[in-house]
Image (cartoon, rainbow, N blue to C red; front, side, top):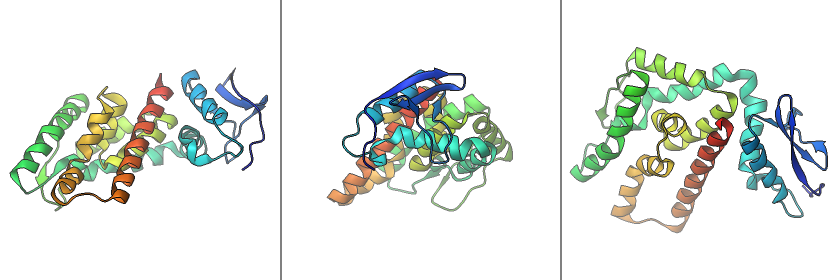
Length: 231
């Protein structure tokens, strides 16, 4: 799409902070006003619009895309959307450990046990951990409490959390970034332990390395989005 505006600005309104292009409000794909909950998030999105060249490329506007999703897709159905994210607790990555070798088992334990311990204390839950890929049922109370923790989050935080969880394969990892004050880079590294091990053993081609870098960047963007939405 050809760029059709000169400047992007943030304007405080009753519903939050709107992005305006040459004075006209930006609208989502569903034609709702692009109203953000915090000034910081609004400024970051306005900067994405300012940074566009002669054409507007949505692929270079991750914050705008997440905000559109929060407004158009999540807000009208936040309960069902939150429930979909919470289901990741049924097969959380951190509960499925390698059967060998010993070094990989030790790496997983060193990175994943502290995250499970944090979630155990934070939400007063218990986890069942297994080796291998045979499914293990988590306690019903654990699933209910984690689902309740997700259900109270606002649509913008849910938008970022969804990306964090789907990329890492772990609800605990996502919640640790959003609620726990953990280092997002360390959590991403923890979620990629198995992949990193495979690379050490067999090497990595350029395409796989590029995909890994892209996923890491998307994880970092989702973390930043959540932080700005809640600031």
